[in-house]
Image (cartoon, rainbow, N blue to C red; front, side, top):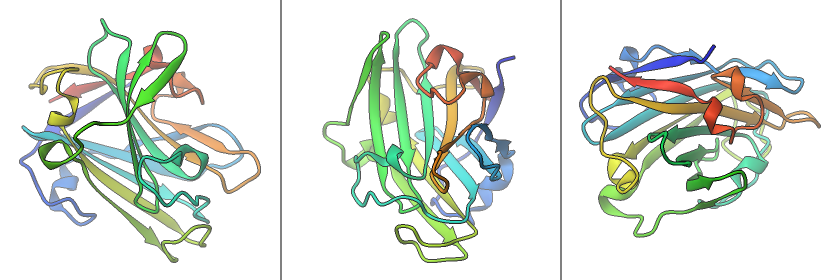
Length: 212
């Protein structure tokens, strides 16, 4: 059965792990769908008139990632991912990735069976995201030991102009929330809606994001 996550409205706020607004968002479990690990992972979602707020909290033992540039191949290391498919009449969706090293990847993906992604043009001002990553129990460095990490992001609706208008209460988007961890030889894939499995680009299997 397809899962539904209700995103509650909020005013805009300064993005940080301790922002009190996160208490409004019920943490949703992102569970293992392949691989040997069973780390606890949750995601929270809010929305304001100007954008989406995301927060992932990830249990971990090691930061198995080394990409130190934005818009790089973050999915080859530990990463949290969010996919948004606002219009079911178009095979086009937005993919956002954030690593525990606080590096991001933004992609607009057209998926007609084969797919590739485009990074944003004029990525500045009101079109630019805000994001953070914080590590617990260790250093924020490639392959450092830790007890966990969290990351948060603000994705402005201005970045999605041309794909969809800003949502209003009662609107529904299809969405997926994921994690990949590389602590073992075989990576572990996590998904909020297990129906997607480890193939995160099966967008027609995404769950539903309901704007409350």
